[in-house]
Amino acid sequence: MPQLFTPLTLPAPKGPGLALRNRAIIAPMCQYVIDREDGVPTDWHLQHLGSFAAGGFGLVTVEATGVEARARISPRDVGLWTDEQQHAHERVVTFLHSQGAAAAVQLAHAGGKASTYPWLPGQPDGTVPVADGGWTTVSSVDGPVLPGLDAAKGLTVAEIAEVVAAFADAARRADAAGYDAIQLHAAHGYLIHQFLSPLTNTRTDEYGGDEQGRTRFVREVAAAVREVWPDHKPLGIRISATDWLDGAWDVAASARLIRRLADEHGVTWVDVSSGGLGGGATIPVGPGYQVPLAAELTRQLADLPLVVSAVGLIDEPIQAETILATGQAHAVSIGRAALRNPHWAASAATRLGVPRTDIPQAPQFWRADW
Ligand SMILES: Cc1cc2nc3c(=O)[nH]c(=O)nc-3n(C[C@H](O)[C@H](O)[C@H](O)COP(=O)(O)O)c2cc1C
Image (cartoon, rainbow, N blue to C red; front, side):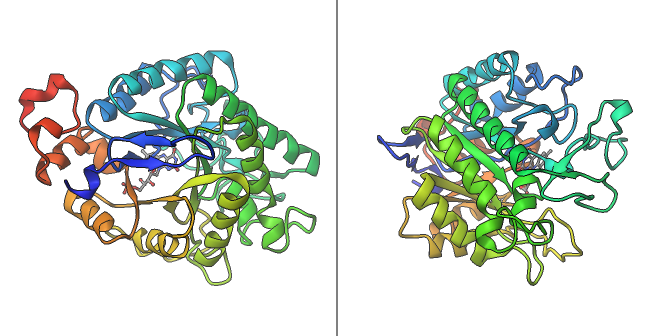
């Protein structure tokens, strides 16, 4: 059996952990489809996410999901702070389970990169003005997080506690909706990353300064979430393992952070992405360009009960298989290749020689013969 189609367990602090039928994970992908701008997942989400489950993926990660209204990247994004949102998530999760996939939700706060126009054809760049349904954003400090965005307002210590509580509330709702795993969004220049990186965190209080200070916010979020999230369910995190700039956030800092989150807060899954804070970084984008970051964390953190997933331009089944077979990661997260072909996992199974009877797919696809 190819590595990609070997089952994988995401460990949890108690119990056997979360068993996945294979190592192909759907990366979170914002859809910007909610016309009502109320954060409630729609039929689009059901079919978008559902097709990945029917198409054989082991774990489907739901897009960046705002833990409060101002946490959304755009007004058309998913949230998890109301009962109505929770019930709509539950409908999606129930369907994913019916197709043999596990369900994760990416709990997110976009911070100073919130309230932007949706990344859809014909949409402008930048911050949506308050008059047009946008909002004043928050961040680690006052000012724009990136050129072209409106200035964010730096959170006070009391306001940080409210955001931490919002993450915990969303985690409680994620459990009630039936999710199997949470992925905290600490990557791509959003709020947690805005605290982690010296590029955007110039605070002088206990939430800034040295690594201990800059990592305090994410450690508090992980602690608060772990407290309400059942012990038998895995808690994961997506990080930007590097800002791709000297003197900024890097792989060494990422390894120290993940070790601490694993030891102190029961984090058992890290999805390794990169970038998101600009700063003139040169990113060597190409096939599998972030895999070396995952490989480094896999190597340095091998003694922990931790699953490392690699992501970024992993498009080909043989490429995914090579990453796993050479021990560079334990799983792969697939984004755009799955947008192009939601049944990527089932077709990859055929390409890698999995016997027809073991191909992860909805029985309705049996005659597809891939
Ligand atoms: C349409 C789209 C939406 C995305 N939304 C998110 C998101 O909600 N959260 C996130 O962490 N990354 C998001 N990403 C990044 C992907 O999860 C992934 O890391 C990236 O696309 C690289 O993987 P790929 O080359 O397999 O697509 C998005 C990417 C795309 C293409």
